[in-house]
Length: 386
Ligand SMILES: *Cc1c(COP(=O)(O)O)cnc(C)c1O
Image (cartoon, rainbow, N blue to C red; front, side, top):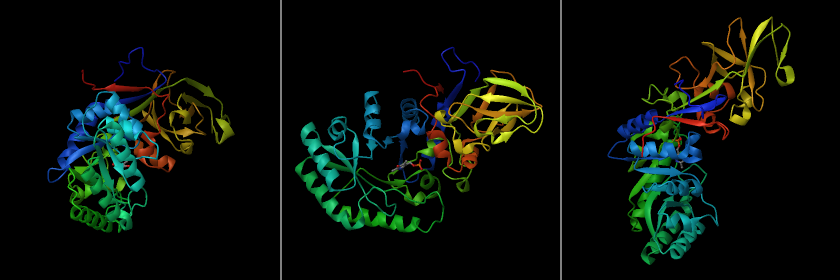
């Protein structure tokens, strides 16, 4: 792990373990019941891990589908040569509908305006638009509300007859699957079953029906249908501590965020540390400077609480996280400039995990990895040739 090539940053880097990602995809596929296939969600630059290497590794491990939020993410997959099924779901009027249809990307439609965009794109592209109709079964975000569903379904069926659209998918998304037993889960499943029945009566016969994100993939086999749609679990994080640790779930965190100390120095007691002097040394001590800050995705909310492994021990950030750097107090321990500081990783070499950072910053592991900044080089381990 320490054979960094000269091109690799000696400041801060995110090690991305693609073997772990492949193993996670295989583990999740094994959990999918009834022959359900797997869509690896690679939105937001693969949850901060890098869109294209993660997409390739997920395909290598048997992901039948890839899922993105924005059309730009889906088009980037095609531009890189991915030819398999891709669904993209976060659309706005005037978006690149035609480019997506031309590229054979499946598009999500939650209402009549979006269906009209898909039909227009189909006519412009001279190609049938592949559409997944999304039902709002209770999340209250995107998706057609039940009152509009039969109208949307009928319009989509008419578009199929007109030859512009093929309804390839019917789908929805959970609000609280990360809280097993939450009272919204069963009603959402029932609402989805109703939506499927309405669509079937209207004559729709999709290739895939899908509902399960990571927590539902891990805890709700009855929600797997034809396709499970995990995101965070692909990257080896647990969707929620109460569902289990990654190891409990047979997953391995993919990202390790490591820095190299920029300075180590002795200072006297009573020395203020970082902006605002919210930390003061209690006696003569050694301060180490970690060259990572909120511009790199280290949450400023973790000032005074974020954990980092330096010189063999967990340390807590001393004072505020600045834009580019933070300080740790090594007490009587020794270190040198250039020594490694591991912010988070799988946790089995004594380092904190993304979940530890989430707790320290009052957020979720998803945000910790996804927010790692564009300035941080991703270094891929286990990349396959070709
Ligand atoms: C992000 C997302 C997912 C994946 O969610 P995880 O909790 O990361 O598994 C699945 N479906 C939709 C619609 C999403 O937006």
